[in-house]
Amino acid sequence: MELHNLRLQIIPTQSALLHEETDFNRVNRLKKYIADQGYLKILLSSVR
Amino acid sequence: MISNNQIHYIVLDGATRTTALRELNIPDILVQVVEYGEGGITLEAWNHVLPDVTNLNILEMIGSIKGLKLTETTLDEARRAVVMREIAGYIYSSPDKILSVSADGDFYSQVELLSKVVKTYERHGEIYRLAQADLEHLISSQHEHSSVMIFPQFTPKEIKNIALSDSKLPAGITRHIIPGRALNVNIPLELLQKNQSIADKNEWLDQWLTTKIVERKVRFYHEPVFVFDE
Image (cartoon, rainbow over all chains, first blue to last red; front, side):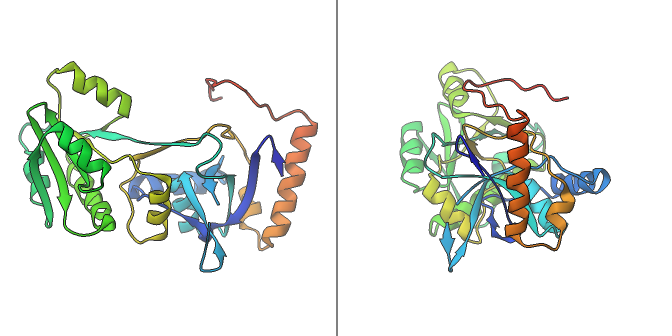
């Protein structure tokens, strides 16, 4: 769906490539948050 | 981006979220897709104010990294060399004390070197990030301050190449400014976890977004805004 150039899309997780490292502690905190809350207000900005 | 006959997406912002969901074995993720290099997307670099640790000489620690060369230089020469990618970055302590940071090898060797440098100093205190404009102000002020690690202004092409390689930049030194960023999109995690085709999931997403539009629950602001979280 496109709205004023807004393109929201669901993609395979494995197709998302990172250009930067991630902080182990921050990732673990977020994993715990997701597990506790059961949801995540998630939005990733990506490029094709 | 297509490589090896597969469509790939480069995560411009959200590496922590992507990694967390990947490690939780969530098969699919929701993204906002933008065309890189278009639509006013700009790429800047964050610089790091090094931890001010009196009992530890951070510069000596950095200098002891295997394969790294710290060389005294001038600001003009450091700026030229970093633009030409002859060095990985430089450390600015004062107008008279500037050290270039480099390693032998190709572009990716320099990227890996940056990662080692950041890992060396981030263990010893809090790092403050400094935008490019603030860096210029700091340099022109001539005031005494902590040393600053200055990174290259990477290009979108370099970011794409790094994403496709095994070398990764240190966390949080790139800063993508993306106009029209969608906020507070909240869809059930269960949908992403479902054993269902991507096409079906995207059909659900289209219907969800159509409903939001019909119910006038999507707003677009032409101007930059401040958002206060609930």
